[in-house]
Amino acid sequence: MMLKWSGALALLGAAWALPVAGQDTTLYRGGPIVTMDGDTPQTVEAVVTRGGRIAYVGSETGAEAAAGKDAAIHELHGATMLPGFIDAHSHFAVAMQMAGGLDLWDKSLAPVTDIAGLQRVIGDFIAREAIPPGGWVIVWQYDNENLAEKRHITRAELDAVAADRKIVVLHQSLHALVANSAALAAAKLSDASEPPPGGMMLRDDAGHLTGVLLERSTFLMLTAMPQLTAEQKLARLNAAQQRYFAEGYTHAQDGATQPADLAFFTSPEARAHLKIDLALLPFYTGLDALLADPAIRFGTYDGHVKLAGVKFILDGSPQARTAFFTRDYARGGPDGHHPWHGKPIIGQDEFDALARKVDDKGWQIFVHANGDAAIDMAIKGFDAIGIKAADDRRPIVIHSQFQRPDQLADYARIGVGPAYFSNHTWFWGDVHRSNFPKEVVDFISPFRSARAAGLIPSNHSDFSVTPLDTRFLLWTSMARVSPTGVVSGEGERLTAYEGLQALTTGPAWQIFEEDRKGRIKAGLLADFVILDKNPLTTPTGGIRDIKVLETVKEGQTVWKAKKR
Image 1 (cartoon, one colour):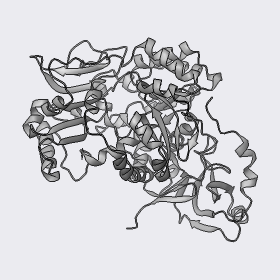
Image 2 (cartoon, one colour; image 1 turned 135 degrees about the vertical axis):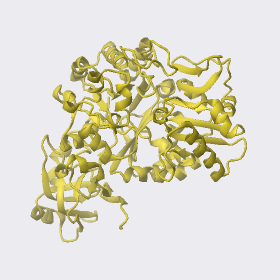
Image 3 (cartoon, rainbow, N blue to C red; image 1 turned 90 degrees about the horizontal axis):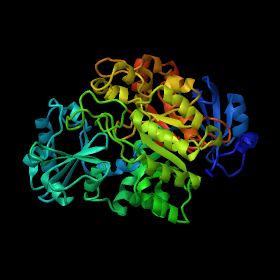
Image 4 (cartoon, rainbow, N blue to C red; image 1 turned 180 degrees about the vertical axis):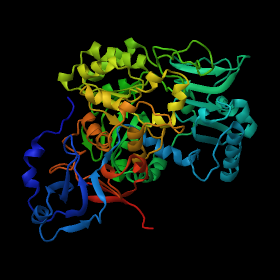
């Protein structure tokens, strides 16, 4: 069964407050300390930490007595301290991979607004990095919806940039890519190639590959691309975790861990460098190897790493028009054909059988499902296994983007934790309205309805699909507005405190760590984020401008903003 952190920590709360010789003790005071302990906001004057745990929470007078005369004093100087943020879903390994490519989010680049502009920045990157003929050019954060042409760039247009280099342009959703002819050849793909089950390869009117690969077809290219060596991963590991620490995260997730990354992150070398807690979700395609390995342990930490559960993908991306719906996309499929409501990545019977194997081992199930038809598949699979809320299995449905109102009762009956994605309302709210009715789009990430149904939701960035920005993520859960000013689901907006719960206590519960992290309470880990302003007293419009000043992991400062 999954490891659960028992209420014994709470019973030992008084013991944590006793001064202990030889353990580092720190007293935090001088600003609002929001504990996130309870359904209503609670603040305290001071916190004492000792040995990586919280020893005391309460008044400053009580803290001084609990800390003892030799404690270090951490003055907040009016800043606000909260429990460290918990990443409910992102792709930690991507933070290491992105370092070697062209990032279209790079603010030093001119905005890419059309295909000619995209060609230009790729060409400039090749020249600037002196990528030789035959070399690979990897482009990140491409979104065809942001181009004036409202279509994908083609292999021919990429060939026009540099036919003698292998160019791969990765869609922002991570569910699609565009490759030029040299890259297709490197992956042994030709006009005669057929997509694997659950994959798509777009073709022009003459039947030639356009270079656009979607869903499982992308794996054919991704496996052909250069892979980071263990030495390269180790060299980039600290930069990746510092990227998360800079956002106030003290817990990160690698949301679809491939076998090579699983081996790396669990290696002694990686564990020696990791300071952030890292939850791995091994991909279901490697399930047989996991089941055959007697040394595999889920739900327990080895240093700062744990295997949290197995990740399934049932459908694609709604912005890439590959998510699986019960209704048709108004704009048709990725290649424009009608009718089109998407299709599943994996069949119902296969999902049911594999998920049962995972559940039989007592491992937690994580399922990617965006469209309502994919969510139906998840529900049917959980019912086939016989999972009920009383079992406390906590299957997680990542994104649950286009959930129908009637599916909330199913989640409550089964005990599903919905990992929602409020950033969609900003980045693709307008795109979704071009495909679906207002009432459907307004129910994206239905936080308030889920809470009313008794569910415990979390919120995530899905980095690198959207930026790794915790205050922006909090703001989108409160504002739910698009760049054109259209609000998607005013009734689903959260208060600041509710939005913070989706970044702390919600994700902690979803990973069976509610008695270990997510709150400032005696006995829990001394994981904190210190902000320059209090989100509870900041107007909604100012939430995204709040700055992270410091991140503390188990009583030690792991990131601090540079003084200006």
